[in-house]
Image: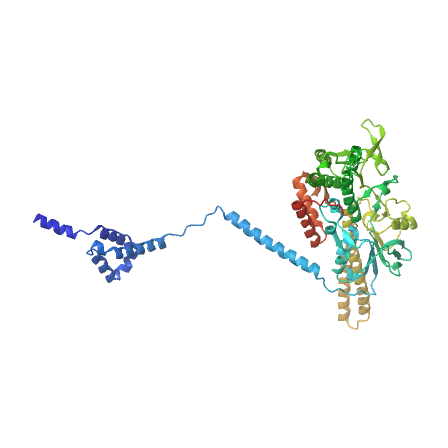
Length: 593
C-alpha cells in the first residue's frame, strides 16, 4: 500500500523540463496577467503541458524560451551612447562644415574674379582724374574710389600691382614672382565705371596748364610714343627709386631689391656665383669670394633677404651642392648701431642672436664708401670711436637701403616755389594736397608727410584720399541740387510747393555739412613684421594703448597668415599658399634660368 502510494506520487511529480517551463510562466505572469485572464485557452494549454512527457515537450519548450527571450529583450532599455568621443565627433563635424563653407566662399570669389560685370561708359561732363603709378598708394585709392564720379585715367610704366613685402622670398624661389603680381587691368575691370589705362612713363607735369606728358618706353613702339594727357585733378603716386647716396660703383655693381626684375636678377646671380665657384681649378680664395654675399641695409628688406638666402643654403644648396658647405657666407652691413631700428630693443637683440645661430655676420656702424666689381670699401667705427677703412670682398652685393626722388617729381618740385625746401619728395599738407598747387595730391614714397616711407603708410594715404575724393564728388552733386531747388523754390506758385522745396533744401544742407566734416589724414600704425630666417619672425604689433613684441616660430606662422590675408586678391592668396606648399614638399629650385 505504501509502495503503491509512492508510485502514484512519483507519477504526479512533474519532470524537470515541466518545472522549468512552469518557472518561466510564473516569471512572465506579472507582464501577462491581464492577457492570461482573458485567454482561457492559454491557461488550459499551460495546465495540460504538465502531463506531456519529457521527450515530447522539447519543441514547445524551445518556443517558450524564444518567446521569453524576446519579451526580456524588449523590456531592456537601450544602452546610452558613450560620451568619451562626443567632443571628437563634434570637432570633426565643425571642421567639415568649415571646410565646406570656405570652399564655397573660395569658389564664389574665383567666379566673381573671372566674371566682371558690365561697366558704365565715361561721362564727358564729369571731371578727369589722372592717377600716376600702380603702387600701394595708387592701388589703395583705386580700390575705394567711386569711379562713376570721375573720368579716371591711370598711367604707369608697369601694368601690375606688386605685393612688395614678399619680394625677398622671390629671390630664392620660395615664391614665384607671378604669385605676388596682380594685373592692374583686373583691378580696373571690376570698377563700376570704365577706367582707362596707359602703360607709359610720366616724364613731365605742368601744374599750371594741367597737363601730364607721357612716353612709351616699351620695346615695341607704335607711330606715337610721346603724348600729353590733360587733367582736372591729379594724384601722384609714382613712388621712389633706389638711393645710392652718391657712392661710386653702387649702381654699376650691385643688385637692388625694389622691383620684380631686381628679384629675378638676384635669383640668377645667386646660382651664377655658386656654379662659377664650382668651376674646375678655381682658387680657394676666389671660391670664398664668390660664395660671399653682402647685403647693405639693416631694415626689414635687407634682414628678410639675408634670412631667406641662409634658409636657401641650409635647406637646399648644401644638400645638392655639398662642396660649398664650408665657404658659403652671408654678411649684413648697416651704418646704424643696430638692425631693424623701428623695432623694440628686445626684438633687435632676438634678431641678432638668431642671425648668430644661422652664422650670418652683422656688421653695424659700417658705412660703405666705394664699390668695385669684387669688393667694397667700408669705413668701420670701432667701440672706442676710432674709424678705419676695410676691404670686404663679395660675389653678390645686394643694395637694400634708401629711397631717392624720381626725375618727374624732382622736375615738378623745381617749378613750385613752395617746394624749394623739400628734399625727400613732394611736401603735402594734412589733406595730402601738394603745397603750392590746387587739385594735385601726392601719396606714397614720393610724398613727405612726416611718416616713414612704408607700404602701410602709402596704403592708408590712398584709402584716405579715396574717401576724400568721394566726398568731394558727393558735395558737388548736392551743391548742384541746391541750385536747382533754389530755382524751384523761387518759381513756386503756391505756399505748399514753396514749403516742400524749402524742406528739400534743408535736407541737402544737412547732408552737405555732414560730408564736409571729413578730417585731415591721420596715420594709424598697425605694427611691423619681419622674417629673420630659420622659420622665425619678429612682430611689433600695436594693441590698444601699447605694443606687443614677440618673436619665434609662432610669430613666423602669424607673419605668414598676416601676409597671406594682405595679398590683394583671392588669386594671389591661392598662388602664394600653393608656392609655400610646393617649396615644403619639393624644396626650392637650384637650376639657373
